[in-house]
Length: 96
Image (cartoon, rainbow, N blue to C red; front, side):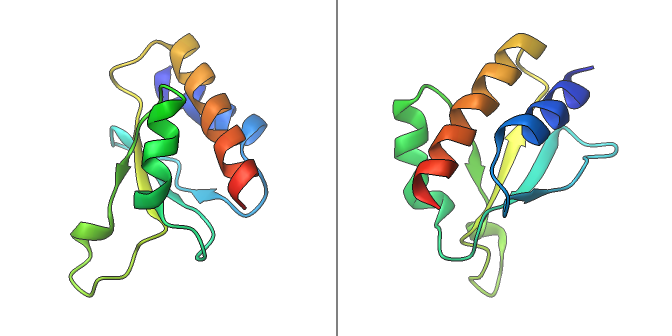
């Protein structure tokens, strides 16, 4: 249910150009934002909006992936997931 809530919220709230997987058998959605954006640099702005994610660039041995992040859906209610994705959608729209 939580995974579906996050996917639905992503479909409804994030701008074109943001891609994600559908997280079959996982606890996260893997998200790719446009290459000119840095997930690490956007994180403080997200925290100001009371939402957070994990930027995953440190997990790339080649140093790429600066525009990737993971969203966890296992620790929040469907309502909180929807609200958090709305906030992230706003952040992404303002920075694309």
